[in-house]
Length: 130
Image (cartoon, rainbow, N blue to C red; front, side, top):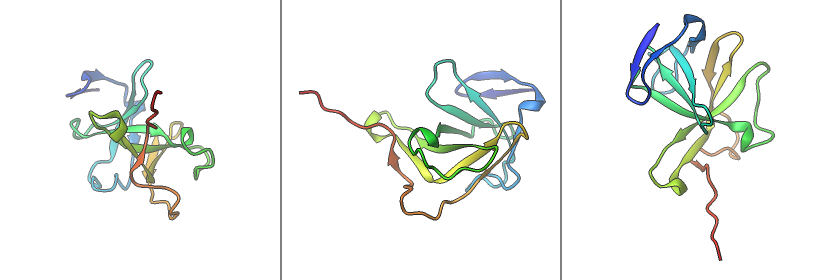
């Protein structure tokens, strides 16, 4: 199969890489089929719709930020990243994570009912040199 994306150009992939989100993603409930793109030495994963290749969600592993983040057996957990030209403004949504089971090729999104997890948590900590 092939799709053409703005970010990565034309991508060829095997059908067995398609991850199905039966309920879609909040705000994009009509999109059900995605592939997860990674770049060598890249920081993010790119959840790309194969139905509308212009729809791409940058993802970051939630466990890298929160050691005891709510997990589901067999699933990797990602927060959706809101990118910005300013590194200090890049945030991650830990309130409504994406869960992906790579073996079963299924995914879902759920809202975590815990105020500890923010919608716009800063992904990078700004440090000041002296």
